[in-house]
Image 1 (spheres, rainbow, N blue to C red):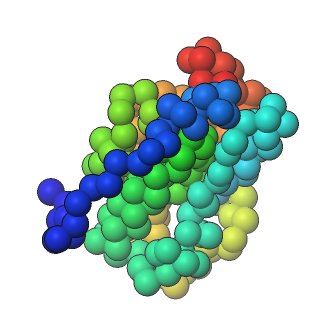
Image 2: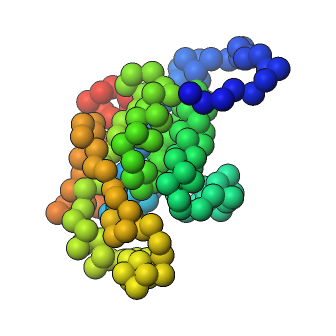
Length: 200
């Protein structure tokens, strides 16, 4: 169980999430993009955000690399640090949902238990897991950041998919096959889900 700060009392706000959603004209949710490095998480999250922005929806993308430049800049890539990294972003995403924002997170988040903890922070239906499914060989071919090459050379220890496991989602709300479909097709698939569920 997560330790709570002592000598603090939860303050109930005057303006609620429901008030913000009414003002925005849409519901707020977490779109949790997960998958191997190079599977297209950030690219897809940003494309979905662009489409939602065009529709006048309030959005924000929390990108894994960007978060590690600030909020999680003190963390490495050990199993314990990965757990803490996802714990922190889960809490941030929860705050953004309360702010009435469609929150898109793009993190490898390799462990099922960590993704479940993030899901458990919010009400049922508020967490939409988007599995960016992509064959490892394709991710390595893309190797946009040159990380797989370094990992294969032993320069990056505990690299997901090579020397550290990626636990595939068992029941994600959305599976996008980013190695088989275009970026536009994948983005449209996510948007259709949001429309079907009455979120946007």
